[in-house]
Amino acid sequence: MIFIRKLHKWLTLLIGAQLIVWLVTGTIISLIDQTEVSGDKTRQSLSNQKSADPLRVFFPSHQLSIGPELIHSIALTKILQRPVYRIEQSGETTLFDATTGNELRIDKRLAEAIARNSYRGDGEIANSELIALGSDEVRDFAGPIWRVNIDDDLATRVYVSPRDGQVLAHRNSRWKVVDFLLMLHFMDYAREDSFNNWQIIIVGFGTLWIAISGVLLVLFSFGRSDFLWLPGFRSGGTKVSSKVGSENNEEQSYDLDSTLSYYSSLSQHGVKLSSNCDGSGSCGLCKVQYASDPPADTAVDREWINAPDLADGFRLGCQHKPCSNDVIVIPDMAFQQSLQSAAVVSSQWLTPLLKEICIRTDTPIQFRPGDHLEFQIPSFNVDIDQLGIPSECVNVWRELELSERLVHTVTDTVARTYSIAVAPNGEASSDLRFTVRFAPPPDGLDVQPGIGSSYMCSLQAGDQVMFRGPGGDFLLHDSDREKILIGGGAGMAPLKSMAVHLLSNLQWEGKLRFWYGARNQQEILYRDSFDKLAAEHQNFEWQVALSDAHDDKSWTGKRGFIHESIFDNLLKHHESLGNCEFYVCGPPMMLAATREMLSKLGVAESLIRFDDFGN
Image (tube, rainbow, N blue to C red; front, side):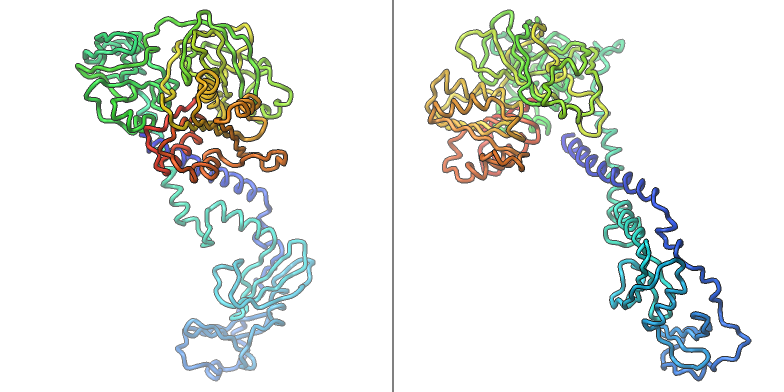
């Protein structure tokens, strides 16, 4: 389903762009006067040019100087009231004066006269030329063609055939615009003047695929757990006995529903695996470890779990169902049935869309660098004006075109995880900080912003929050290897915790590098703090790359996407990548690009840890 989901997403993006092109071009074409486009507005009716009078005496056709080729047809017609014979031989057309029998050629003077006769308007002939290879404005006519340019408001161009004097087309500036729009509208990039081309056929099949894959994704998004509220569904599955434990909780036997995933079946017993996606396989948080005989890994497992951990029996709890005699290990946090509470101490915007939330827990907690808390998201109804958006950031929010209120009504338990952005101090701590990026809806979609980020960004000093944790597996290796942190956006939180812990708490003397990606200088988080750390610790390197600061002349640092910048400036020249550990956290696209880059460099998966900060 991973492949289907990704293909569905990218095809929707590409075909959606074409739909916008169809809408825009179709609208513009409909607003343009079609009589001007077709040339009818300046084209004279030539109904007066009828066939020559058959009762009149003409030069005998059998005495014409005609070549030996087979004659296909002889027609008596008129050009400018002048009777002519039109002879068709082997695909060639020859004209003869029907009065004198002399061959008639459509020269410049005659072409201009024919054009003038077919034109009605106030313009005068400006010039004319014989185009040897034809014109893209009369694509169905090959070979030489006369173009007569008329000086009028529409820049009319009359095309005359040099073979038989026929007026082939009237073109003008309006036609040129509409012709370009029609090319875009019908995807007729090869200029075949047909909408039955391979580009539009591909789009048609792509649209069919979007519809089919969309139905499949909807069907596969439902599991038995979505129907547990229906009578009989809660106990309808076959029960199997599985043993479940954690590092600090002894194994217990549970009778689990074999038709549900571990994520859903354990939740019936009050054991809640972390998840930001409610078990749909798109967050990678609900990891479990099989003590022995793990099931075959799925594509979703492989997306979120590296090869060494897969070999150690780690799987996603939302992707596998309980079997008899399974023994699995889950995070301690999953057994925490009671919630802890904390008070919001401060809430301030660090960038236009990223906020730092500081809380003070009722009971001090111990955590590790990289750990997260799982916050419960209650119902909320908040006016955007209550978010305390700084005046210098108002324009950014206005461009988002959000509704005036952020609303969420709880119908079921909703939780979101956020990494702790401070380092542990060796003892239980009460004051914790989090960096939360507000997640607006994707462009063009009329949906609510991210539920978790909307709630967290609405918090003000004095508010109470409920949470579980700490927990997580995005943790530092206990080794002397060089450590390279790569982050972006709100992915700063766990990486900041790791960097400060190594340098300030452990006084670590190994090489530590932190490369951080932002769009502009305004979005560089904790810049002063890291500049100070770099000045105090010779073994610490702090680099920032800006991806959207082309016009910022005050920036003298790295530019471009962070994965490209660290590759160009460090990794492709690094002499001992096999002795480095990588810790990556940031937006999904940045995370995927960085992992792909490290894979191409041959970095072992066991040396790469990553975390998608979610929303």
